Amino acid sequence: MREEPPAPVERPQPVVSQPLQTSPPVAAQPAAPPPPAQQPEPPRVFKPEPDYTRPAPAQPPARPAYSGPASGVITWSAQFNRDATMTLENGHASQGTLNGSLPGVPVIIEVEPKDIGVVEAPSPSNRWQKLVLRSRRNMNVVVTIRWRVL
Image 1: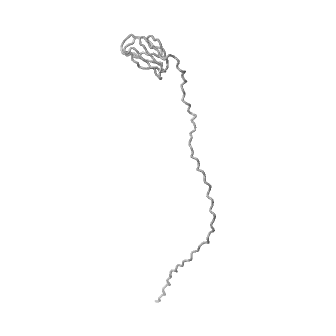
Image 2: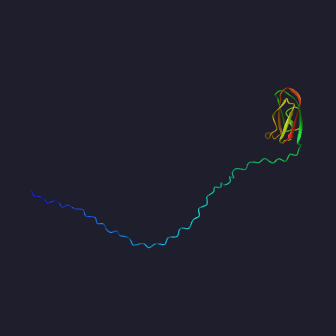
Image 3: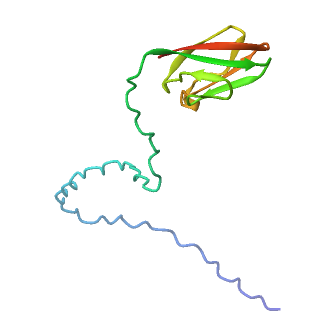
């Protein structure tokens, strides 16, 4: 048998480092001027546009200044039944005889006799023209209503 010569062994080549190549020095460039300072944008303010679709609330017509008496007396005679109500409105009474009327401006009232109670007093809701009274007992009476403008 024939012997074959052994295969040659490859040996790694040693790494030889190459000297570092430096690039030639770069000539210093003059520095570029900084960009011009920009003013910041002003803040945006939201201003809603007027709503022209809604009409302005209607104002009641201005009342002329009251030039009537500062106080007055109304007399009202009627047959009152217990717990019955009687209404004085716009110078008219629901029953009986009436002399006088409310002035139609803010007033304070006093009612006599004391057996008559006030159910509804003159107020803005009735334009200062209505007064509702109730009797606490059966009686034929003359009711005196004193009013004073506020």
